[in-house]
Length: 186
Length: 170
Image (cartoon, rainbow over all chains, first blue to last red):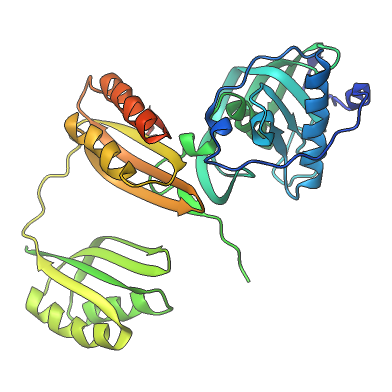
């Protein structure tokens, strides 16, 4: 299946039979965040459960637009993304989970400020492609997906695919003055 | 023209930059390069200026420092030397559990490779220690330096990434 810009993946979530459970999110320097995740069998019931758990955990986390398996302590190449309603999003594919995803094309690189639930006290400027083509497979059916997206959804996908490879945004900050304390104003 | 290197450090509060810059302006000092930032509740100013004598600046800063409970130093540092790049630009990122010696061991690898650190920031955020440095490495040394950094990082239990810095000229 190929998902062009504007085509929603909505509906596939109902294929996940079991409801997701909210899992605790781990923070750096937990070593699981620095390990490259394992390639998974998307039809494995444990992977399908993990996919559902990622969606459930993402949904209860305020401001969370993506969550990767290492962030819930599972060293696996699975992540959930949902940038619906985000003011910076252009193309939006709704809520979806991809397994074993890779970026096959990345163009139009732009800087942008990123944070991460697993690095709660810092943000950083990271250059990401603003147009990407990502290939992966859906959990449950194992159906291959090619997804073309842009802007904030493209950034979220690259951030999550990095997590699956054991990388944090800290590994890509633009320079010594591109790292910031997350500020909480009164 | 002689340059002065000035440092001012104190507990952060509104007005430190204005007080110090006001003293320097009154003396006709021309501020050139500076970094001024907050470090765990302390405010640190490091700046270079040209114009007045070191003794005059020291005398003028003293009452401001005493009143504001600031630690101020003034040194004449001679004329500016060449700051041409000495190598290829890289960004070094290190993060992991805080422990003694991360900065010392990582920067020793860069120094042993003949690399020059031009900018470095560290942050301690809870148990997480992060170092981001901009370094200039002699041509051809990036790969062995990266290998050595990985060895040292493994020993320290931290993660390290060395990548080429991009400098887009628009």
